[in-house]
Image (cartoon, rainbow, N blue to C red):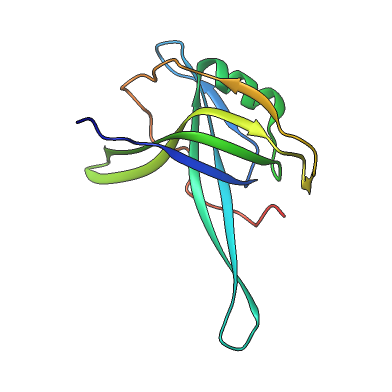
Length: 144
């Protein structure tokens, strides 16, 4: 029996997508996505727990991310979890990221809309095996 590797996230972009073309001509877009869970502590005070996720989009999906996504935008992302390793000056480094298969924009920059979602793009293309390391490790300020 084959395993299932599926990730679904809804959150706000932490920065504009970083887009580049790699050696084989494939376009790649990378951005961070913040997901926040809220709860009340034992004193009844609201607490927020924010997790940051590294998102990678390839080829046509990268083109759409470059054109339509920006910091603060709320999106729905579906993809698969991918962990990679590489060496940097003799030090082994690791990155865990979500390789997006599709995303849907849920709001304009920084404001949530209560209207129906609009599908933006889907990609069934496979990403290359020669993934470059994540471009930036800093998470920056919360976008919302």
